[in-house]
Amino acid sequence: MELLRNADDVAMPNSRGGRGRAIVPLLISMALMLVCSACASSPSAATPSSVPSGWVTHDFGKAAVAIPPSWQVKHDTACTVSSSPGVLVLGEPNPPSETCNEAHSPGNKVFLVADLDPHGYSGNGQSELVNGITVYLDASGKWNRWVIPSLGVVLAGTGPDADAVLHTIHRS
Image (cartoon, rainbow, N blue to C red):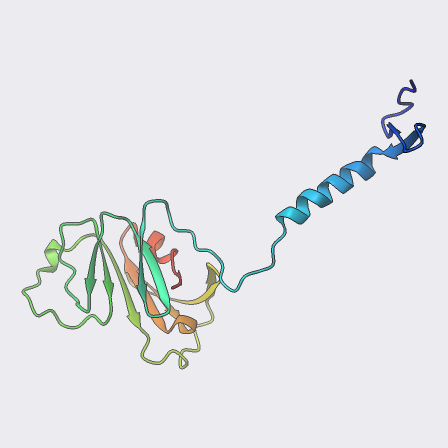
């Protein structure tokens, strides 16, 4: 039996019962091609979002965001009073019809509203790609505001956990 003369030679039987040689790098390259071809996929139109495990996704038009399960969801109100650690408001923040004492509002608030003119926003030069979506950044005071023309929405948040919610934006 022939032993390897150097690390690059591998003794292999051929179809006639004799010995043929294959180069280890060639075998490794072939193996890598097979493995990598199984991993390759064509690019998709939507990039998967990074939604933490256990979070709940809420759709609004073409957009969707996810929030921790302990947060409350409200619709079409400016009143964010809640005993939960955070509130997601979907829709226009209309003046509250109930008594609204913002002193009882949670530290985390996120609003997802329809952009009144999704094609009219030219941006302030600052944009970011989040989950495959271009968002235009517009920070104002304690609020982090994202204008997202491709989804026809504005997403705004404040509080220590609001940024994590904003970063779950994706197509619904």
